[in-house]
Every structure is written in structure tokens, then in C-alpha cells.
Amino acid sequence: MQTNRLIALILVVVCFISAIVGVKNQQSGIISADRQDYLEVVRLSGPIAGDVGTLAVRNRLLELVKEDRVKGVLLSINSPGGTVGASKELYEAVKQLREAKPVYVSMLDVAASGGYYAASAADKVYANEGTLTGSIGVILSNLNVGKLLDRVGVEAETIKTGPYKDILSPYRKLSEAERQLLQGLAQSIYEKFVADVAQGRKLDPKLVRSVADGRVFTGSQALENKLVDAIGTEAQVETALRSAAREKFGLSEKDKLPLKESPPSLERIFQQFFSSQVRGSIFDLFPRRSLATFDVPVLLMPSWMLPQDLVVYSELGKS
Image 1 (tube, helix red, strand yellow):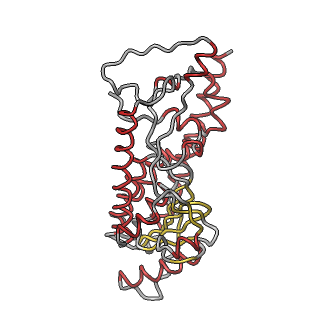
Image 2: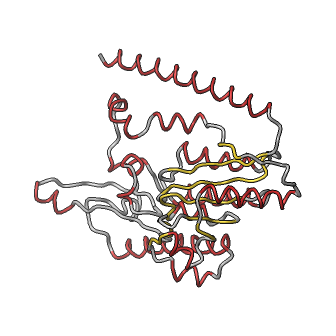
């Protein structure tokens, strides 16, 4: 029975990939046939992690550095944040793209923590009045189930090569030395977060630090605290970006600069196909590794806001 299900799954995936490749090729042909300059919108949605979705967004931003017909980029963000490394990758990609052409950010429902990290590197940042943003900070969290295991008569045994290899083990409390080590780790990442935001936004680091205590702001509050440049809808951001692109490249009003969606990435669509909703029915065919075999990720957002798969499969410092 499992063999039949696996064969059916493979056939579905092959058909799916064939369809996407066909659509992608067709769209590429349309774009190549139209040689006019334009603006491109790139969408960053959902939790940020070192997966194909986030990396596809990063790769597209870097590709746009060299695409001469793209005169400006609208980065639409709807993300609560995520892991440190992936957020930094996006920040650096936006920073590099900004040197070549105008990059404007439009914040939707939420652009917090790692989402704000990426946004802060842009030329201009717009939010809606009801956008939730900010949440500048670093968090490591873990559950201690040691007392529960004691009550049911289960004892954990660990073999390790160093005193810190099982740090944040769910089977025991943190030692004071471990707590200080992790606090230093979080503080180091936090300082870099603050410094990058200050550099991207051209703000005094002291001003950024004064609001970088993990709190979340509405769009209006973020504007008051200089975390965003203006309040506006995505359509208003598009208009402002078009004006900035014309000014930077010496274009006239005759240059329409239409806004086009970023070409679909096969990896991003493939990831959506295997989303957490689909995993429950498909990935049950395969054995899953225990949470105890993975280190806890350092996050720029509380772990309970992330899909469980991301928490389980994110790794830090494997050795």
C-alpha cells in the first residue's frame, strides 16, 4: 500500500514540476519579448529561515542587481521574522541591491524582527497604519521536561565530548555557566542587529537601542520612532518608487515603468506545494527524526510563532 502511495506521489510531483517549468518558460518568453524598462515587486512572505523559499527571495534580489531593465524594486514584506542567518542574508542582499537601484519596502500585516531586519536595508520603508513591526531583539527558548520525566520514571542519559555540547537540553536545567554563555551569544547577535538597523536606516545606534527591547509597534508608532519613513499602501509605495527610479536614471514621464511581479521561482512554488498543511498527509510516509537530536535555533522571534517543522529542523552549530 505504501509503495502505491509513493508511486502516486512521484507521478504527481513530476506532473507538477513539468507544469511549473512550462509556465515559467512561457512567462520568460513574454518578459524577453517586452524590452521596456520596468519596476519589479519581490514578495517576502511567512517565517524567514534557511530554506528554499527564503533563499529564492535572496537570490532574486541579487539577480536584480545586474538586470538593467529593472529600474527599481518594491520589496513587499509580510513576515514575523525567523532565524538569524537567513535574516542577515536578506539584509545584505537588499543592501547590495540598494547600491544599484532604488529599493522601497511595503510592509503589510507584519514585518517584525527578521522581517524588519531585511526591511531596514532599503532606501525607503513604508508601513500601513495597522502594520505590526519592530520587535528588534534575539531569543533562545527551550522546554525543561526533567521534572515530568522524573515523575513517570524516565531517566535521560547523555554522552558528550564537551561540557556545553548538550546545552539547552530539555532534560535538565541550565547551569549558571551555560546561562551566561547563551546570554553572551544572544547579546552579541543583538548588538549586530542594532548596528545593522542603525546603518541601514541612517540612525544613531543609541536611538535604535532605545526601541530595540523586543517591543512591537504599529505602523504609526514606528513612524514616530523613525523605524519607517512613511505611512502608505503598496500602491502609494509603487508611485513613490517610480518617481525615485525616474530621478535616479534620468527618465521622463514617457517611461511608464510598469510594475511586474517577480518571475515565479520553481523552488519557492515547490516549497509551497510541500507546505505544513501538505506534510501531514505526505511526509507521514517517511520516518521523522526526534526533536532531541537537534540543537535549538537562535531566533529573532519567539519560537511559538514558527511552524513546528521549522523549529524542529533548524540547527545551530552542529559539530
